[in-house]
Amino acid sequence: MRKKTIPYIKILWRNHPEWEATWETEESIRTSYPHFLPGS
Image 1 (tube, helix red, strand yellow):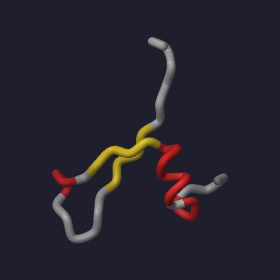
Image 2 (cartoon, helix red, strand yellow; image 1 turned 90 degrees about the horizontal axis):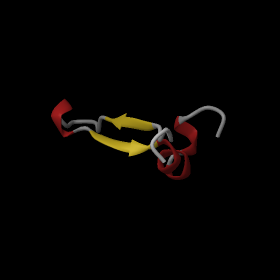
Image 3 (cartoon, helix red, strand yellow; image 1 turned 45 degrees about the horizontal axis):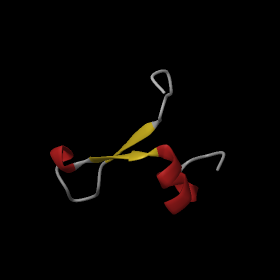
Image 4 (cartoon, rainbow, N blue to C red; image 1 turned 180 degrees about the horizontal axis):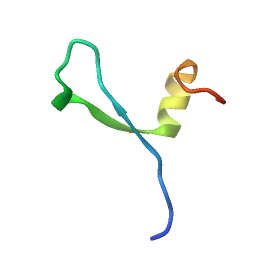
């Protein structure tokens, strides 16, 4: 488990300051918003 890589994507929501950005797993973004990432 130590060498496993979990890709995260920084999400910056519109009309919010950068410090309110969140980190989401790539898998959850592909599931919820497949049009945002190529190769889904």
